[in-house]
Every structure is written in structure tokens, then in C-alpha cells.
Image (cartoon, rainbow over all chains, first blue to last red; front, side):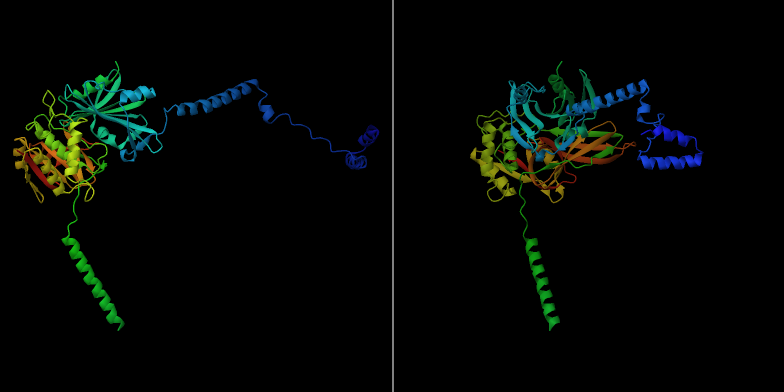
Length: 225
Length: 268
């Protein structure tokens, strides 16, 4: 069909009649509506026409992706794990041979007093929660040469137990040894101290100390050089 | 008629209450000494002062600190009894045959895995621990300890220095200096740690949530003075072996005290 012949005829008419003629022509020829002209000056695509914007957005997306991957890994490592408070009465107590044996069997870098040959191990207990998760270790040991009696507790840095309350309440003197910060207090009946090493927290009770700084001798004996 | 019956019912109820009340008041509920929980009360006490003195004494060589053996329950009586005889074994070495009560440097030994468990189990049975009811009562503790001492060929006398709210500290102090220790039969209450500083002391309480038997072998007297040198407070503490896994040694305050009895034990 020669659309142009009609088109030319209509174009030579005046405006009002032209519009009417165009409308009649469309109806008779069943022509679709002419597509709207594209506005090329706005929109998502227009935004990314600049190369530097593409680079900036890609960089930001990469940073977000990295954070999404590495933050959970860091949290899982335990550095930011949630603290818990436990009660000794709620723990399950089991006997272990000694802290030394427990550390070797489980490949853990635990500190202990090497008095097993020159003293007496009264007991060594592992305290777990009701899911069998480690809460703390307690070891009572004496030194037959000096008569010193020491109670040693070990827990991880994210765990607090009610039996440690007296250490936090009493140990208000600070002492540094080999970059380890130690909190301690000497009393006539017993001396107390606590410190952190690696991922663990250590609490030491020395019954009837023979000198004011005897507890620090015990701590120095435990810490690696 | 209705009113009459109501009056009768009320009178009958009143009579029953009076009778029952009289009966229960006349029947003391027996105190028994058994396993107890340790609780950490939230509040410490802080005492501020200009100066402070501490008068301290404990028995030569300190004291043998024991705790109950695996398999024992409510054993504070047996543990206290074993500590007492081990203390006196230094002076009468046949109280625990074969046991050397002190280290070479003179300090009391802590428990071993042979001799002291045997003594403890014997005390446990002689005191009839958990037989009539959980733990022991006062008579079972005293009788069991006496039976052990007599069985070793020695005699024992008990002197109770508690009379109501009064604790005879002078007698306690005098006997302590004669190497006599005291068995404390305590109601539920607090023991303490005192954290000393230059111008303030922190009194840290630990609550013993039940009746408990422990042994006193020393004392600490804290005297606090203000800026004018006036004595404004005096605290009397006994040094006590707690006989517990969770707590070895603590201070027991006697002004005021919460004791049922305090028996100075004299073995001959």
C-alpha cells in the first residue's frame, strides 16, 4: 500500500483538517501508534555513561563483599566472641590427671606450676557446662619444700565464673612482668593474683604466703621467659 | 442456730491454732551441719580511715587445711574433726599413726591420699554422718570426734565459749596461745576477706548459705582511727579453716557472731 501518497495529500491540508485526516487514515489502515521518542537525557544507563562512576561503584561493591566475607571469619576466630558468666554450682566436675597432661593431650598452650615431682597434687578438676563445653580448670597443689599451697584456676578470656569474683574484688595492684600485666594483692591469710596469657586467664591463690611478694614469685615461675 | 454453729467452728479453729503453735514452739527444729553453697553478695563494704592497726595471731606452723574426699557428702563435721586431730598430731603423734603432721620447715601438711582420707572416713562413720538425717548435728559431731580421740588412747574436753550473743574472745585468745583450736558450729552467714589499702579497706563478704562446721585457729583485730586519732571502729575476726573445696581459709566476724556454739577442743 502506498502510504506516502496519502501522507503527501494530508500534509498539503491545513492543520485542523490534517489531524482529522490522519486519524481517519490510521483507522482505515489499522496502523499502530507511532512509538514515543526516547528521552536520552535521564535514567540509570545515563548515570553510568561516565567511566569513573563505573569504577567507583565497582570498588565500593568490592569493599562490601570483602567485609561480608572477612567479618564473620574474624568473629568465628573468637576475638569478638560474646562473653558468658557461669556459676560453679551449675558446672559438671570431672577429674583430670593434671593441667600438664590435659594441655599435652589437647595440644593447648596452658601454663602450670611444675611442682608435680617436688610436691603433691591434691586434685585437678575440669569444669564443663551442660553442653560439655569447657568452663574452667582448677588445680590444687602443694610444694613439699616450702609448704606452699596453691590453687590455680584457668579459663578462657570470654568466660567469667562466680568463683573468680573475689579476685576482681581484691586484686587492685598492677605489676608487669615480661609484658604480662598482673593484678595482685597480698594478705596475711592468702595472696591472690590474676593475669592473661594467650587466649587464657589465670587466677592464683596462695594460702598463707611466707612473704608479701611470694605470690609474684609463683606467677613469675609460671610465665614463659 | 446458724450463728451458734459459726461461733463453735471459729472457737475450735482458734483452739487448734493455739495448740499447734504451742507444740511447734516447744519443739526446736534440730540444726544439722551439711553441704552448703557459697554465694558472693553484691555489695562490699568500704571503710575509710586515717590510720588502722591490725593485731594478728595464728597457731605456729599455720594449720592443716583439708577438704572432703570423693564420695563424701555433708562431710563438714568429718573434715573439721580430721583437721583437729591432725593439728594435735604435732603434739601427740599417735593420734594419726604413721602421719607426719608437718613439713620439715614446720608448716602443717595438707592432706595426702592415704592417711588423712582414712582419718576422714573414720570420722565420717563415727559421727554417723547422714545416718539419722543429712549431715551431723552438734552431739553427733562432738561424740564422733571424742570416740576417735578416745580410740587412740587420749582424752578430750570441750569448752563452749558462746553464750547467746556473747563470744568469750579473751578465753579464745588465751587458749589459742596455748595451742588450742576451736570448732565453730555456725548458722548460715558471712565470712570475709579484708583487702587493705592505705586509707580505706574493702570488706568482701562470702555468704555461707547453710549451717557449717569449721575450725578457728587464729584472729585478726582491725582497729580504725579518724584524723583526730580517735578509735571509731573495731572489727574482731577469727581465722578459720573452711574445710571446703571452694574456700580454704577466711575470716569469721564475731562482733556480732552467728554461731550456735564454739567449742575449744583440749586433747590430753
